[in-house]
Amino acid sequence: MEISKKPEKALPVMRDRHLYGFIALCLLISLPALIFAYLIEKAWETAERDRADRRALLVAREISAEIGRQVEDNAHIVEALAKLVEIRGTLDSARLQKMATAQRAPFIPFSSLIYIANAAGIAVAYDPPVDKFGTPNIGTDYSDRDYYKELVRTGGHGPAIIGPVRMGRRAHAPNVQTAAAAHDPKGNFWAFTQGSIDLATVQPDVEQILAEVPDLKVVAASKEGKAFIHPDKNALEEMRDLSKYPLFQPPENLKGEFRTGIDEEKVAVRAAVLPISQREINWRVVVYQPESLVQADAAVMRRQTWTVLGAALSAGFILAGLVFWKGSGTEGRE
Image (cartoon, rainbow, N blue to C red; front, side):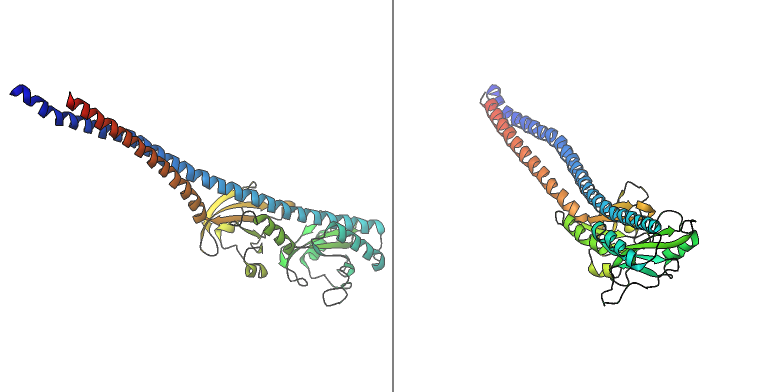
């Protein structure tokens, strides 16, 4: 009787052992897999943030280079025109008018105006010759301008003077004035040339760049924090002061830097900030996107990671379960 009862008691015991072994095996496989999936998830999140930051920085570099090029080109043209005035040695309006028009039209199409003035600050040549109301621009007094006062103070010695970004009185658009002095044979301040960049002409270029990355936003601001490129038309028209926002502060690193912060609409964003340092103007470009978009892209990869892991573990558990039941049934028959 004792011999006949042993198999009946051994069967559930053996099945229990196999079950415990199966559970232990599942745990042994699951825990490293879960840890690995967690690390992969974090790696994907970091990679997505890095990708977003690099993309924003590339756009910022492209826009910064374009604005800097316009500033540099305008300064070169204004300085070259001042040298031509020195060589001609005349302030005759008829002769200088041709020079002004010839310099502006082919070389600086983004310029809103260019003029030549005498030492008293009175324009003697101007392109365009008349304003939008048909009033002649020659004879306009610019002696109240900051750049003129600086030329008088320094005697016009040194590189071209680039003024602050301001709303143009004539074009009513953000612009920046650049002035360079012309001297007489004795080296005295005798005349000056001035060219204004219409910064509104940069906006279409920015929009074209952003057409391929519509989730990005761009702000360009002056040294004082006045916006002259902005996704909000109202902010652009009023040259909104962004100096109070930490997000739009000048970067400390000349190569640019990454930031997280809050934009004007109190939205959490990631940004790439790059300086525009040509001629020591110290402007900056800020390219940013909502943090939620970056997290959403990372969430897609997170779901894919856990889906693949779940499918792999499920297949493994099913296979292990089949092996367990087959093994326990075989031992019971024995």
